[in-house]
Length: 377
Image 1 (cartoon, rainbow, N blue to C red):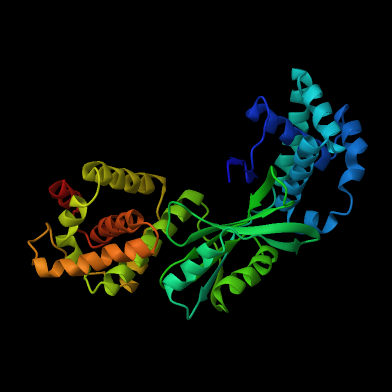
Image 2: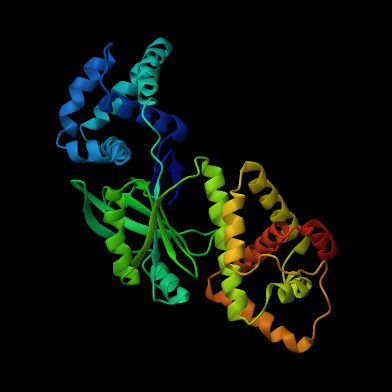
């Protein structure tokens, strides 16, 4: 994936003089063909090319975001392959050069958006599954299939589904659909999949998307058992993202420590040893603190975090104010923790989860984590 534009992703190289201008014109062309206009020349342009998008009623009615993305794909694809909608792109580009015409079009779009705002906000749904498969096996299966594309049908459209791992988080995957196998091409991200030691979560905007993607996940990972299905309650996307990240960090840390036969208090004593084995440990600690402070500023659901800390057995526990000296014979446990990080694909991410978890557990239990971190560096 080379370039993300709005809610879409560009796969492959595009050769245009001005990328930003190109996508502005593409967006304007999509607006023209997808909406009804009362003023000229937009009304005539919309009617002129309307036949090119017939037969899309199902996806238009059931998933408007995918519908708009498909229109963008059609114009994008025709632009590079001299299809009929290349004419729409060129005509719109010419019209929009006129500042007054552009303002006129924007006014019509804004008026439609204002009427749409009266509709209630649709929050995504979170499906939670349990699985009998070991965590590392599930991650291995998903990673192994990350380069595979599944040719499917979604609401009457032929699509190509691929599920890509995140480079920044363990067990986090992003499903994308494209409307052609030829590159360059436009696609759209369809929700997310999160795998942790205790469950698999799939976040989707609606049932249609979930029913579309779930069979592929089960084809890769094996049969999943539904634990719960809930609508997202957090309206702030930053708060939801931050809360999900911290819960994931807590769960992976808890699992890795248990697997290594270490307690949280014990690993605190090994933090200096871990930092000694990292490049630029001071910069690492600073990045951790900056990231945590930003999450707090943007919003975190502390109730959910507190419940997670309790469920993991880390609530109302005694924690050291500073690392204590450790027996060299215990180093083997930490090495196992390192090995788990390697098996997960990137030990740095696991160490990041560890330090984030230390901050979170200290904070929830009323301990001062900043003094601990000052001692570490």
